[in-house]
Image 1 (cartoon, rainbow over the protein chains, first blue to last red):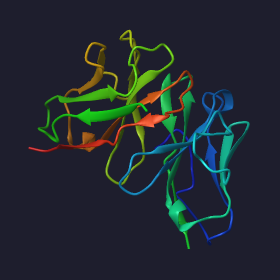
Image 2 (cartoon, each protein chain N blue to C red):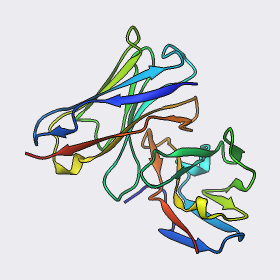
Image 3 (cartoon, chains in turn orange, green):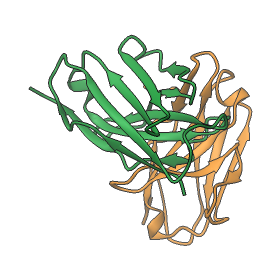
Image 4 (cartoon, rainbow over the protein chains, first blue to last red):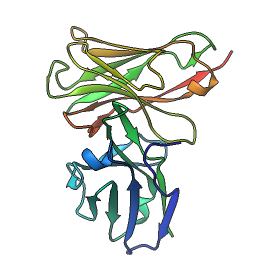
Length: 110
Length: 119
């Protein structure tokens, strides 16, 4: 059971837009910066978004992040087959004093 | 560009201690700007933060693993290490070493190393 809640899967067609939600609480998302990671099959995760909405180095502007209250959202526009991956949200939990992640969302580009 | 490389046994027996080392290259391990992390990912499952250590040896551990985890840093070798005691099959996972700045945004990851717990 992950501290942060993500949908297990999302899907969309090439060229379309998709959003992935991440729900938490006041002890984590509500009072901390949120980051997003992309994990391609067999690879290590890669930082996409940090501090809620800043793109990491080399990440195209098709990827965006936002936060409202105790929830965060990753948006991906102009979907490409190469975007098929698992996506994770992460943050620090001040009550647990621990790094926490969502369970991951598998993106399928149909 | 800073790179991280995990090393250690790929097979550990139940009840024994899992020991991994992460070697830092292309940058300094002695920095107050970053923390050094261990994370893991069981087969087919999500990411789990194990803990962090800074260059002075201060540590922060996941409460769920705290009783079994020890992390340390050796600045002379540009390495940091993970010991996880009393392992069971549930500790079978890909183990990643990583780095994060002041806020918990993990910006550099190692490739990961698979550790299997089995007799």
